[in-house]
Image (cartoon, rainbow, N blue to C red; front, side, top):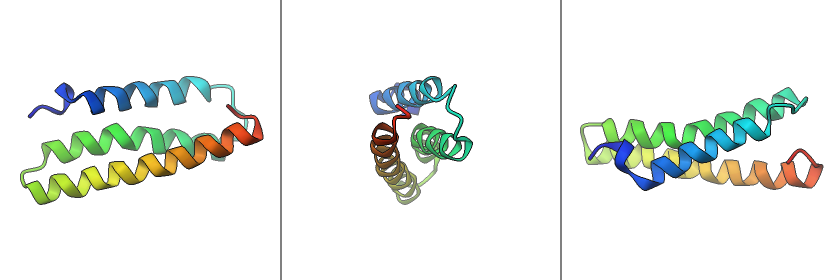
Length: 85
């Protein structure tokens, strides 16, 4: 299956783009770097996992993507509380 056909990949790409756009003017460069990297890793790991040759490897990268979702959710909660988003 082509990762570009996966709805979850398409949605995570849109989320990553939204995060980049919403943080363009953010002056806390460390936080900005961390949140954009978390958002970028979600669709990237889905794509990489789907391109792997074994089911085990695919699951491994999908697990990374899921973990990045948790990381990003945490960062969004913090960003909202401190007024970044």
